Amino acid sequence: MLKIEELVHAFIHSHCDFEKEIVLTNHFHSDWEADVLIIDAMGLSHEIEIKLSKSDFKNDFKKSYLNAATGEKFLKHDKVSSGDYVCNAFSFLLPMGMIEHKMIPEHCGIIEFYHNVDTWETEFYLIRKPVRVHEDSYWKLNDKDLFIRKMALNLLQRKMEIKGKHEELIFKNPFEIKKRK
Image 1 (tube, rainbow, N blue to C red):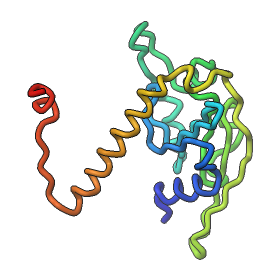
Image 2 (cartoon, rainbow, N blue to C red):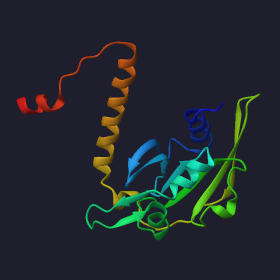
Image 3 (tube, helix red, strand yellow):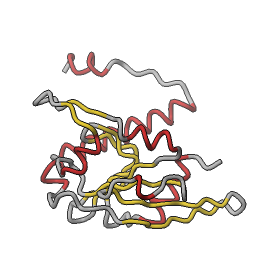
Image 4 (cartoon, rainbow, N blue to C red):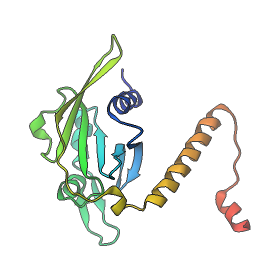
């Protein structure tokens, strides 16, 4: 069975230009985690949400969030479709034929994939381009320097996570270290 990491790897390596785009996976932004976030050289961003089951797809439309500033509760896709959303575009990446296209809101792009278990090849098909919900650059809506620092910290944490799986690591509490300085 195809693992989500294998699917993500196949998609980003066949559809992303790493010299011109920032490509992140499992990146937390806005009020949720993006399975794939692509930011191009002009700062236009595209979130791609992977759904491998009908129930997971349906649950995506039940997700609600609370605006910390106003206390207002909103549904994820109401926010995305209204343009009050950090990304310029949003798409679903789904197994071929899993969801009827009419069930997917018009603002969402549809990318379907077919995975051949015999050859271990995965093919992707753009069924519908996403609607650009606004024209603002990702960098107009997010602090680029803070974004880069968070990316660097995430890379460091992942490195330590991987290293820790192979050998025991003992770390001091970072809050105690900061107090001493």
